[in-house]
Length: 163
Image (cartoon, rainbow, N blue to C red):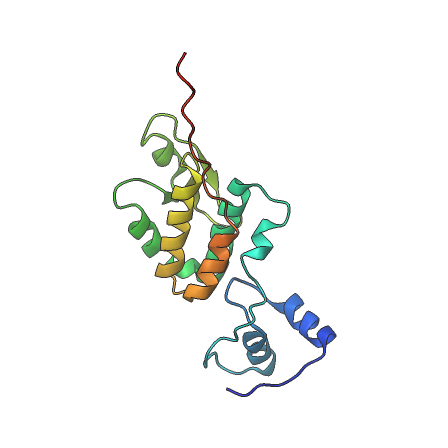
C-alpha cells in the first residue's frame, strides 16, 4: 500500500461521497475510478462510531447502527436475522410476531429497511447485539470497536437503601 498526501479540502470531498460504516478514502477513490474493490482498508475511516453520537439518544444510535449496516449489507440481513434470533426475537421483518413474543416487548423499525428491532433490552444488551451483527457482517475489529464506543453503556443499578 502506498501513502499519498492530499489537501484537507480533497479529503473533505471524499468524506462527503462516503456511504456506510466501512467507507474509506481508498474505497471512494476506487468507486470514482471505476476499480473493483480490493486491498486493505485505510486506517482513517470516513464513517465511524463518532458519527452515531452527534446529538442522538442511545436508542437512536442503536437504530442508526442497524440502518447503516442494512445500507451496506441488505442482502445478508436474512442470515443476520437467523443468527440473532436463536433464543429471542431481536430482529425481524414481522413486528407483530416480535411484539407477541413476550410481555411488554417494544419494537422500532430500522430506517430504510423492512426490519424491526427489539428495543426493550438494556444498553449493554443492545451493544452485544450490535457487536454480534458487526462481526457477522465482517466489519474490521477496529471499526466495530469505534462504532460500539458510540453506543452508551447501561447505568449500574443501585438498590435503594433499606427503610
